[in-house]
Each structure stands twice: as C-alpha cells, then as structure tokens.
Length: 83
Image (cartoon, rainbow, N blue to C red; front, side, top):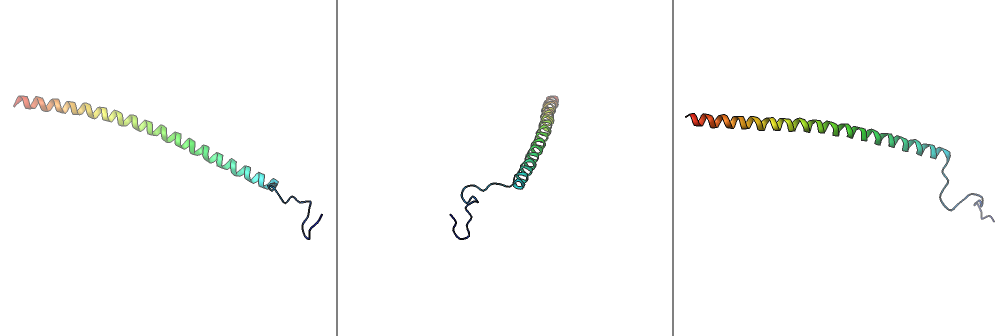
C-alpha cells in the first residue's frame, strides 16, 4: 500500500540503523576518550606519588624543627639557671 510520496520499504518507525561510518566514528571517538582518561589517571598517580614524597619531607622537617626547638628550650633554661 502506498500513500503519495511515502515508501513502504523504508523503516519509518523505531531506531534508525547507524551507518558503518557512524559506527567507526563513534568507535574512534570512544577510543580517544578512553586514552585521554587513562593518561589523566597516570598523571594523577604521578601527582599522588610526588605528594607522598613531599609529605614525607615535610614530616622530616617538622621532626627536625621539634628537635631544634627542644634544644633551644634546654639551652635557654641552662642560661637562665646560670644567672
């Protein structure tokens, strides 16, 4: 059955079937996004490792400062006793 200008053989209802070009384009786009995500994850891992290293250095400096402060306090008390 035909209604002026409409072809019964083309699917008019439902989801359109993607062409091979669309499928390839989508696959390439998804692959690119996945690569970008993986690269970002690797960058984050590197930053986390650097952050942990810096935190270790900060902890050592804090410990050293506490030791120096105790030394200064002891010297100050010894000087006060001598006067």
